[in-house]
Length: 341
Image (cartoon, rainbow, N blue to C red; front, side):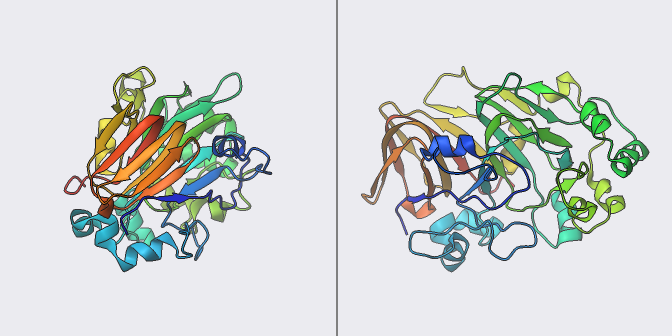
């Protein structure tokens, strides 16, 4: 396997509304997309507790997960395999928040190993690619340190106003990016459309479950909130501290723009590529999301794949050196560089 592969939309059922922006980007705006707010791109990850839901299927009918397991070095490269075995170590989503998401957080690697028998927790990052509405916002981290007993009371009473009110409220526009370390409480506001990178799990601990989930058990994933809340970062994130996770990249020049805060590099990488006319890219497993324009992706083996706005592609490491050419804007998402994690 050496050629990049185009992938169709992959939108497993979710509990919240959204999806119109995904359909519009992909040129499928006539679809009924009210509850398709997440497009899992090149996913080898299943939804929590599911056997297949969430997985991406290749054109030949195989799950991407199984294809990678059958030939991990070709897909991922020897250096990656030595660090992560046959895991892609990455999940990429298009996420269109048709309503505000609930206040939630994700476990660290250590917590996930202990409680979910998983090598990966769920650190994530958002790349804002579009907004709608009068005041699109995201909510990363508590403004001030709060006590565990205070949080426990909010969760017991399902005090939405207190939970949301304690979080930072940050206006966003296309080109803004937010790195969300594991444990950080957060929410995405209505009208925010992102490319989301994350570790390859579906562990969301949802402290604001009422009016979103069917039961508190789905909020704490069967652990009980007493256990789940031990993974929550209750420290304060003032404006100065927020600068370590929030970047504004819309006006950064250059054919390659590193999109994410420095601390994210041990979990994943993302850059915006504007070749005009051509750009050479080193070998890597990667997920491409084309935001605008059209062009061509060529491999060192002679494969040539046209790329246009709204298309998503998975690129195996064995594609080798690449050339991206044309008048287009692409977000390239990659797992951590070998040896970084």
